[in-house]
Length: 222
Ligand code: SAH
Image (cartoon, rainbow, N blue to C red):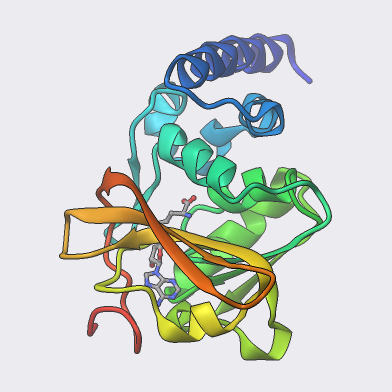
């Protein structure tokens, strides 16, 4: 690697370390989540002009009027999924592929669905570039889930819908967790749904949040 490029990469390592410290201060505890954030090169998933902001805790535009979520919410949602390493996870809303890259280090397999073809293609190339091999990106309406590969140990929805899509709850394995932003446009609540081993469904709110729209049959109309 040319030395200029290497020193640039080193600069990003420092920026990631500072980000991890900040997330720790914000209350992220799971060491595997913090390690994943310290390793995934988020700057490669944003436009070159935005790279210097890649390790600030802010969402950034990724084209097609969509955003890469802020690292803080990505870490908080990842932690809330309580992953141990052997799970199959469904992600709805691939976007840049950042959340998928984080999950790839926390679970065995990630199936991610994106509705915008350009973003799905870019995310596939980005995940290849990052050396991620256990994420598959599908094009489609993720609000319907992916019945052919259900049930899932964990489901993460990274776009805001009016309510938790019923098909996603149905596709949750016993003991499984779903997390996502649901409620009115632009002011959702982060909801965790748990299917207990005996089948009972339990919901809890983890606080307010703000995401781009979940557009689809079980989301908002496009
Ligand atoms: N997880 C992403 C965040 C992307 S923003 C990241 O880490 O970068 C939310 C994404 O959800 C957008 O790319 C949007 O196109 C996508 N989306 C919205 N509704 C969807 C649906 N019904 N199915 C699949 N993807 C959807």
